[in-house]
Length: 395
Image 1 (cartoon, rainbow, N blue to C red):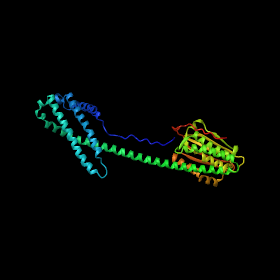
Image 2: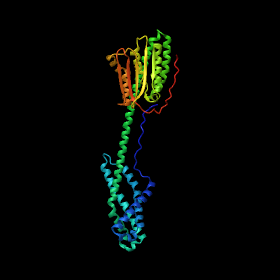
Image 3: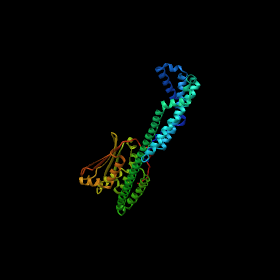
Image 4: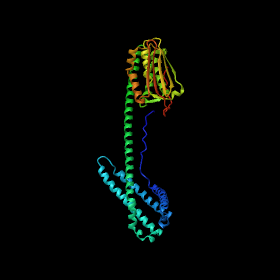
């Protein structure tokens, strides 16, 4: 069965996993510590001679400071998602996130200042500079140099979270609209298909009624063949596309039903290469074209005629052509055919399925038969069961 499937895009998430904290903290700390060490060595070489200015202590401080910062990021993201900036709550969100930025920055600065205080004593730096070895001095120093960029970092986290949220909402809205559009198109296609089925059935029953008294045996055979064909048609009620090979089989079965009326004078010739037979086409797309050929080309002709169905690749399109050698029709008759149920239904189905990727061409001249060509997208064979259900039609 060929069905349109909408694949829901994976939602973009800005949710770090807890196991990321240690690797991110260590990596960022090593890079930051190394950069800081060489900058200090370049600007003031005397700093690196101090215990706390040595490479190991500098990178150790940065690794611990960055790891604790990474541990606070999930909390900032949680608050950003819990209190988003949405219409009607912007002021509340602004107040919450100003307070959140201050709390985030103070927490990080207190932790970083405590780490700095501990490292000063562990490295022996506190003994050389007793005033700087006080906890309040260590925390104050970190606050003076780090508070503002911690606030900016929190703002960046909240902004990134809001951007991701808006992107997810846009994706969800587009997906919802696409689903609604697909359901609407599918409903219209099913309505068109159900409109075509009674039209086909009533026309066939009308032909049966014409044979009932004149040739009861032919009428009986026609009813049997009609039942076999309808069993397949209604079983594929929800199927919008089938391989061309299956469509040709359905069309051949319909012509067999008409042969009960016209006899062997109604002939069919099918010329479709193997590569085109696997291409998906709308189900029952050929039946109304063949029906028009029989009705307007051969009705009233005792010698019948031939219907030729051909298919070929024309660039990136599949061209299907139905040609009869009947009596042909004039311009006014072509206009009436174009507005009939069969062809108008065909155009509407093609419009819904392929939008502007199809074409319908007529060629009709009195006494020279009638030709109609459909151009459909040449697409890869549908991932459906391409086996053709065989129906035994009585001879």
